[in-house]
Every structure is written in structure tokens, then in C-alpha cells.
Image (cartoon, rainbow, N blue to C red):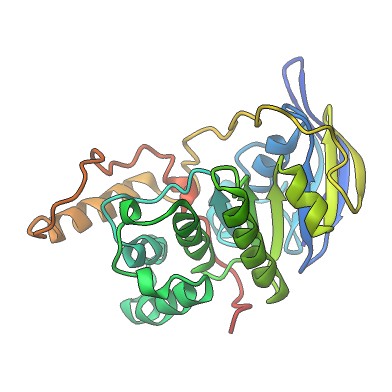
Length: 291
């Protein structure tokens, strides 16, 4: 499913990865761990084709993505679903609309959306929240919406970036149980985390990175001293090749026009403008492994 073969990436004098080799099989559940600045974010950004390696090969779903042309990148990214620590929900859309929008930007038909969205909401346990808005949900429920959005276009791989970082311990374990259920259904799960207690309890495969090198790849525990501060989010807003940003903005404008007459008092969270960070929110696609 995901193969790194002697991959090196440097940022000037700084090291991202050095001769990294790892093979993640289809259906694996893998924790990606390591100290801040170890290379975890570089690993993920390379998979997403936001950056290119200096050397080595990266295989995703049987295709060497280090050799593909730029116009092929969006199609490759449609094999991936992303779940974020900060949820990244659109505040002025309902739960149903947040998840449906991930299909709309990929030009899915209204019939497909009507059939798929309720199914995924039920899968993640929030079918009864479809008409709610993000500010009416708990943090755990918001993360379930984020997971539903990542799953709705049937990804081959689910990449989770600190998905429990904003959750209390009990809710965090609920989310982990959900991710495990999704994995059992066939989706490959790659989770970046500093949550030592979760990694130790889950007893899954752990790929540990330190100073750009993969230092451990085995089932078991976290293996590092727990850090007091979580790693800074190094994702750079502006994954502009995931989808055409102008297309996303046009979709939002159309939605806003359609809903100008909605009679509902909501908390003013400011405009739901596309700042390009939303582009990376809607990475989905691939085979249907849930049905």
C-alpha cells in the first residue's frame, strides 16, 4: 500500500528524512511516532505529494508517485482521507452538509451523496446529529464528523494527524475504537501521534522516527519519553494541487447564495472563506471497503 525505499528529504541544512525505508501493507494499522522535528510531518507530506524527495522511491497503492506528472497528483490524493487534530469543520454547514461537501467538490452526483452520506454518518455513530451544526456538538462528535468526511469518498488510506490531541482521555479512546473498527473493515490507517498511553494500550505496529531516520518498526509500545509539549503543526496551508481552489471557492459561493434566506440565528464565527487550508481537508477517494 505505502512503500518508502531509501527516501531522503532535506530542507537546506536541515534533515527531514534520511534513507528511510518502510513497507505499510494494505489493511495495516500503523502509529507513526517520534520526538518533535523527527521527520513525521515530512513523511506524511511526501505521501501527499506536497513535497518531493531528494532521492528514493515512494509507492502508493502500487504506483510510483515519485514519477507521476503534476496533473496526476489530484487523482493520487483521492486515495487518501485526512483526519485532523483541529477538526477543520465548516461552521456554517450542518454535519450532513460538511460531509456532503467533500463529495460535492469531487463532482459526485446528488443521488450518490444522498445514499453515501447517511451511511457514513451511521458508520461513525452520529446519524442522529445530521442536522446539527459544529458549535452544537461536543469535541468527540466533531471529530466523528471529521472522520466521516474523510471516509465519505471511500479512501484506501486514512491518515490521522493527532486525531485525539484535543480530546479528553475517555473520548480519545472512543475515537481510537472507531478507527480500529474502520481498520478492521479494510482501510489502511496511519496515525501520527504523541499519545504514549494510546499507543501502549492499542499494541499496534509502531514506526518510530528520530532525527530523520526510522529507528524502530515493530508491534508494541510508544518507546519514547513522553513529551511535555505536542509537536507544532508543520502542515503548510495551501495544498493547492489537491483540488482547484477556484473551484472550491465557487462551490462555497454557490452554497452561500442558496442559503442566504436561511432563518437561523447562529454564533458568528466569521466568513467561511477558502483560505486554501480547506483544500487539504477534502482528500478522499478509492475503493469502497465498507459495503
